Amino acid sequence: MRVCSIIIAIFIVLLAENNQLNSADETIDLNDLIQQGRKFIEENFEENFLNVLDDSPEIEEFFKKLQSALAGEYVIDLIALKDTAKSALPYLDSYEETKPYADWLRARLDYFEVASELKLIIPPPKPEEVKPPQISNPPAEVQRKIWQKYINKTSEPENAKPYVSRLKPIFLSEKVPQELVWIAEVESGFKPQARSPVGAVGMFQFMPETAKRFGLSTFPIDERTNPEKSARAAAKYLRALSSKFNDWRLAIAAYNVGEGRVQRLLEKTNKKDFDSIATKLPAETQMYVPKVEAAILKREGVKLSELPLMVQK
Image 1 (cartoon, rainbow, N blue to C red):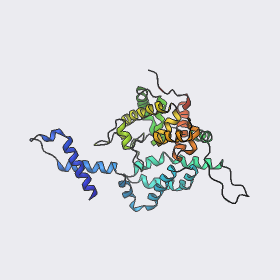
Image 2: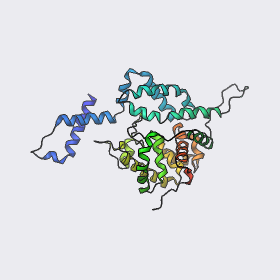
Image 3: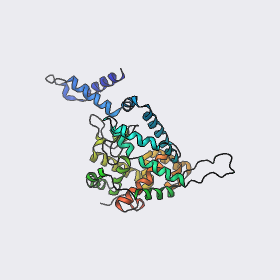
Image 4: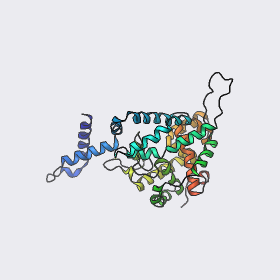
């Protein structure tokens, strides 16, 4: 019933917005219009993802736990999901409907590996302690070093080759350093169809509202899956964030978790730099920022801190 209502609603909107349908000599292909509505629903309503997982409650539960861990406070909480993440990939790859989620998850498998390394540097409890010590996240500088060590051992994603040279000029045209194109490696492994379980889509992982804010349509064609258009939107967003925070680490953190979240934390702690608030950000953001830094350093040989806030043209 809910799906039918959505289709009817979409049908009405299309009728209202298509001025050509007012002509008496034109006919409406209702079946075609309904098919468009169904396609939109399948591509944009995340319950479709959960429906596919009806036969695999273990993987559905894994994704719920993963989202909780990524939004949580402690990076080492990701370790418990490491084995399940690896075993979930073949299942997700085997269905056309869930393959975009496999692309999203595959780009984040190294989060589990790095979390394991970070755990090794957290001091163990002292023998005389009755209560377990309060867990604390490693400081930002330590996390940066671990990520640099890890990314230095990797090669650029195979899928990056056809895109990097095409997308760098788009970043430059928006007065944003071209090296920031490597955010796509962290977001999606340069996979245009990648989709997160919460609804972010594309190579640069835009949620619907942010996509619309920066000029991307999600219907009838989802432009978030268009590499060039999504790259331009990402560059515009990064330019706006760099202007707001005047710092690339803070801007990239805001790209991941939202500018409001970063701004509120800066105000609450009376701090002005990323390192001072890093351990208080969600686990995903703590991983995301140093991974972006490490990727840019490895792929381009330049430090994030050395990138200009505005490209001079």
